[in-house]
Image (tube, rainbow, N blue to C red; front, top):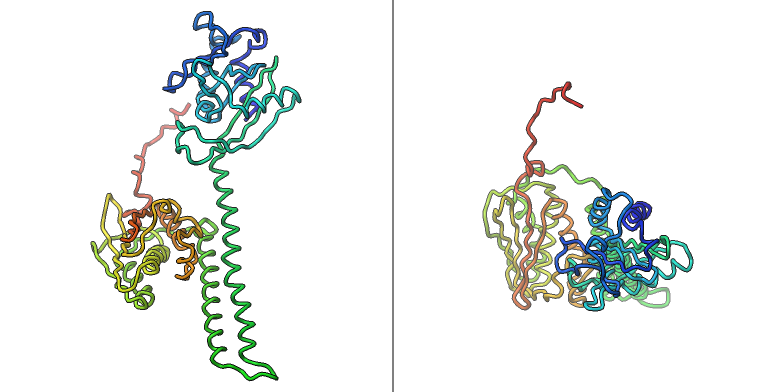
Length: 424
């Protein structure tokens, strides 16, 4: 990509080498409102507007070259021998590689200037990846760092062209992957360590040749071993399920599924944990609704939502499953009267192993994967899952699913007869 950019920029700045001591001011694209009218080198601005843009040996190609550079999503910036910007496309402005200093003109980011200096001294192109503060004007807000892959290459007469690509998403994926590996290791270590200790205690309780057995203690340790092994088995099963949902296995062919049947199966599956806490699971809403997808996956998604509601609700409360048709789709909502979720945690609760309250989560016996599985099932069914919550009042999780087959979402093109003689 950099080679193509060098050819493109060379056409725009072809005469920079022979005019290196003259003032260069480049008008920024008019389509980007709020950006300075030009890149000021700090010297006096003399000459007409035609002199502000370096001429090209091929005048008819100069507007096309500039338009092509402006259309790139990759930031392109050209610095002169004094590290002053002489060319910059809109993406470079958006990434903060070029900044307006008001009366002092414009300058390049300090990291870009440092990189350009190294390229001039060595004559070798350099590449680095950086996490920069996101400019407030850039989409996505200013909280998340902007990941940028920067490549700088030398041009003639001390000029340097800088190419910057936004790699924020790949950095985020890498962080999620690292967190996932660390969390899996931690989650597996806990039950495995407990099983080892319990097994040793059980051996001592059963006694040896010189000690009498303790049946009560042996039974207590055996029950704990059963509990921990069940937790470990569930964690492994959910990891495998999450792997399948993320594309390790092909998705089944979408089939019409009755929502009433999904809700009935969910209520039957959650009857035991609900009875243990004297929680009433109710069904309210429209009947005879139909969604399209995998019945097994949809049952798993709604079951995870109901089990989550039961786990985080106090005893003798109510969990309600509501269904309704909305906007050509179907909404399945699970409403509880539980502890609620803090606003700062709402955007992260669907991450794998994320727990708003780790102490309470471990007490409930959850794996931290239930909501992540729900999110992937919703995505695989061309739907989504939303949450609204009030601390101390309860939470509402809403699973929105399409009410028609995926192929019916777009109209089929009309059949057109093609005349072979008309094909050029």
